[in-house]
Image 1 (cartoon, rainbow, N blue to C red):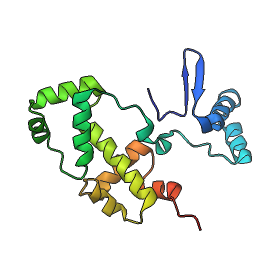
Image 2 (image 1 turned 60 degrees about the vertical axis):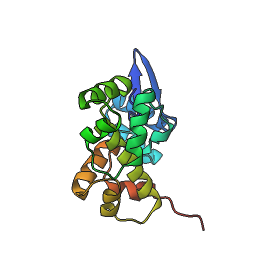
Image 3 (image 1 turned 30 degrees about the horizontal axis):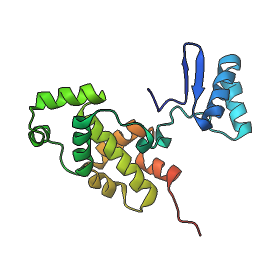
Length: 177
């Protein structure tokens, strides 16, 4: 499963996200008529021909959470302590398993490491704060556990395809009236 992809073709079947019909059409035009014609078509249609990922639009809360009871408990603990320093030894001790066992069981159940999960959870929280608050990027960075706003911005961009300021500009929710 690759939820960040706009258009997926597998064994001759192409699927796309709801609003990805534009990406799908531009993809077809690009393949059959070239990049120039696709770019011109996008401008006429008033759509962005440079979208390469739908990652900024994904609401992780809507995706199924992998794992069973053990990994769910670990995820809950990580979610409740987003701003805390990641300490694998302390996390393992909290669940009365070795670090190796924690890493192995979590990976078997979720397909990722606890650190990868924590980073994604921090980005989810940061996305929400960027959309709904006026807090600075540095303040949000600290609130989700990163002392270095530059390192946070790089991680955020890797997960969403946008820098935090660009994300805020695109997705900022303002109160009506």
